[in-house]
Figure (tube, helix red, strand yellow):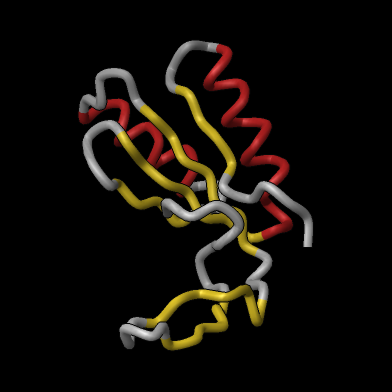
Length: 105
């Protein structure tokens, strides 16, 4: 949800650090999913339900991190329609959003 260019279902290559913890070094298999983050100004339950209904209906997986921050994951074939819908919602003042996929692979 929080990392740019890392999406639901991606497989990550890792190496052990000198301290023993794993460190991601890159994507070994791209799931072709897209991640979007939504920030709600008020985060009321009606807004959350609307997002669940609207974007869940478009095939997105929806995750709520808090009452104000949500994430969407969708397959590549739905990404443009989802991005268009998100932009329309942002222009209507419902919320602000960003994409987690910053580069093309």
